[in-house]
Image 1 (tube, rainbow, N blue to C red):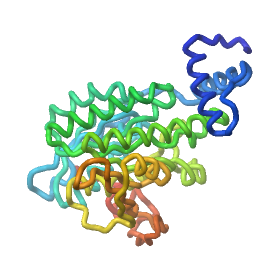
Image 2 (image 1 turned 90 degrees about the vertical axis):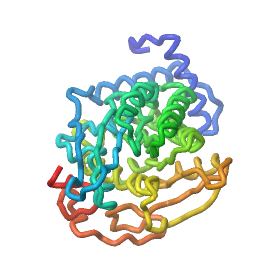
Image 3 (image 1 turned 60 degrees about the vertical axis):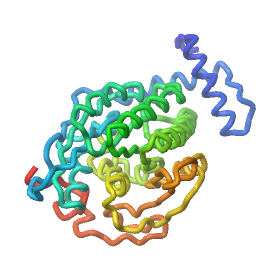
Length: 350
């Protein structure tokens, strides 16, 4: 086995990998010792290529849009490195800052942001983050989590249970909750086939399960799915940071642009029509959302298993998405400029 010691836990993981791989190929779910070794070597190679976090990302906490006056909206952001903004160097480039800026500008209200997300966190860390978040008495919470559950091959049911409990606790306090579901980890460059195929399947399965758990707990989800797909694969130098694993400042801006419409809708302040609105069974909606980034799933007014499925046009997108031709915003070609719209720039008065 090329000097690789395979533990009992490794074999359990490879067995699961084989079952998924068998499902993908239509073949019998059998993994040979050679293919097991290949998957282990690929995982080890990815861990070597993907560096550990050497320094925490900038926090971005503070008051956004103070010039608007009035009582601030208190927003907390929970989750992993994608929520914390690992890979960028300025507070205004972090997802929390981008979202706080977007909400403040769209609603013309100040937003006070607190980041409790932790680099490297898995869903099992959410109880501690919720403890910290509730101290701020938040009005709205954004959770981005799941990538590390995939890369560490965590038990999916347990990860989903932690997320559902987190949403339930936040909702019990009166806080609105928006969850960006697990992105497609298989799109990340350091992960090669066949491990890439398994990671893609695990990501999608986790995202669908997250959607069901979050909506059942009273929150809303927006799928990030293949946001890390064609766009990131087409221009990795711009969309990924230097480690080729975490998004760049522009990559985070794209992700924030996808989350922002659902965040505004959760606050009851989004008057723009969605490109598609439908009512569906929760499990069906969860599978549908996995297939298209930017799809929102929210509880139906009548409750039960019937939910709303909405596909919003993305802020600042000059292309056609979901049949909607979005206007090109002034400065859209340069997301870091002050004229670039709701995301990509922190107000000067921050």
